[in-house]
Image 1 (cartoon, rainbow, N blue to C red):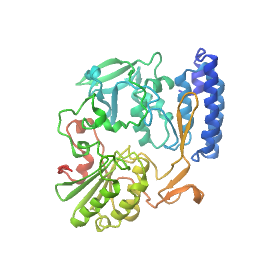
Image 2: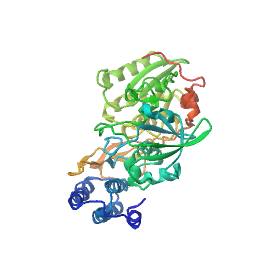
Image 3: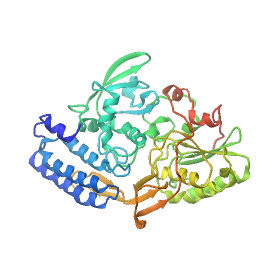
Image 4: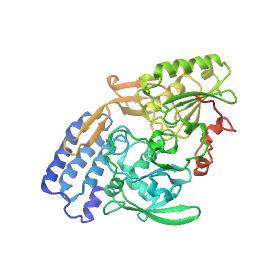
Length: 438
């Protein structure tokens, strides 16, 4: 729901005078510090963002806090760059959540984890929110975050489970309690869910973590796969990088985070092992699984993937496979782009969550009263030929990847998921991956 629609709806004054002043100070900082430093806005979009912020400042007395913050998020998203955003749900827990976690499968939205008191909802398909279809609810929260549709779908796992996001976009009204339309075991029913009273989170949380009961984040949650045998891609989700030998001469390199993981070998040390394994098995095939890699520090892995790309394995079509998905984002797509530029990889899965041209790096502008961080981007990543002209001093990395579109498309249904199937891996190894422990 747009700002003008909210005002037309006849809202009563929602902010006392002191709060109005504080919010206007925050909006002023967004207009100056944030818009001035971000490079991803086109001139036209920057002018529109400034105009929207000016209108927001005037409208504050008639808006709730959630509506104000939602408009700040929508303004940041006008850049159409997934890295230009308000830290509300994924990187920080500024907005509240419901005590459920959800995932969008090829056949709809499902509840994959709950707190114990909501266990009866586990595995249910969500058919609607507050009487609205999932399509309509998803469309309402879509403008809160920029990026391609794939990344928007991933970010909806957060916004559709946030009472404040739903209140701010007009999907629900009231105190944040939501009525969900659900379907489970052939039965349609409704359930009311109240916001969680857990403290505000100050560190990131990835929605994909809750796909596996083996992830440390799932402790204290009831998870739909608990007690079941897990496929290779969900066996060690808390490990940022992992290499295992599998049947049929396959090496499986799960790469979930482009950072040195505390308590484990550094990425540089791990990379030496990867290269040694490739050299030791001259006829092996390698799977690089990037489907859950949302980024990190690309400099930690750039050299490794350049060496993989120039190896004999990567130069022979049909021996190097790269699995991508909607949460392959930021530094998570950089390895794929390097391999595409210098090797002959076969891409598997679905389109990644980032484009081959995006703005990143940058920093945060802290709004002084609300404490919201607005992240600005100021360096260009150009991974394909063409695209807008960018001054050389603003280019962080330039590659020539052309395309990351999977030639072996694969999607995950809820039935696949609960049966422990991995359709992406099965495009490579039809009987699935059977891997040794790391």
